[in-house]
Length: 318
Image (spheres, rainbow, N blue to C red):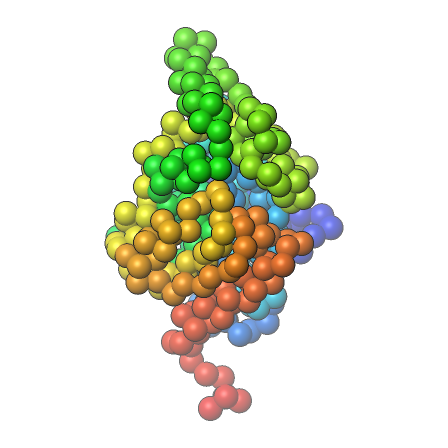
């Protein structure tokens, strides 16, 4: 793992290995001693949702947690953003879950971090990944799942209520064609991540394009392997929520058009989670939107209760 200064920001660039691929991350150092112990500060390991990159809105969440005193490691998946790996712009659930596990190991080696207080944080598709990664582990201190996509089949049914059947059929056909192309030509077929209603893209609901572009950073590309629909169709990490042993916070957007809120609620029930509801859509918890500050405040409150309860008080607090 290598660490270098990140110019003009409050973070450092970190690179770590995930199964032979170099992944890039930003390390934000927690401010103050609220969460500090003799072993160091806790660290939140954070990644984006579908085709997202760490420079696309994650820094605002990271800075909010760092301001409270918690370190954050925000990373790019293999094939996206600043990370290495090929093919590019291709979602592999298994690969992204493996990257989360590698990022956890890297976070535990960071200077000033308590390796026994590592937190998994995920949003949208990554909100499902963190349930998958945390299942059956005793070394995770807490889990935060924000507007999570926890059931690919339910998400497909949910999308059918808002999209024309012809659009769904085109997306499925494009996914199959991409799989064939990768087998024959070793290169998948690309489509936009986000587009306007009626355009060929993964996300095409009214407002999706504007919402995603509002947070898009310089490394983000509006391109994704069309096989993503097939990749996610059978992905159901919510079914493993009952095997998450760490304290779990699930934050649900009640009018979420991208990640079915009822599926998130079922996963939260299985995981005995603390649940927070927001009367908004999928992107309304992101920077610049009405519910962004509340989402961070609830994360800080949750982590404060679960990460400070065993700290030895200082002489001034006795």
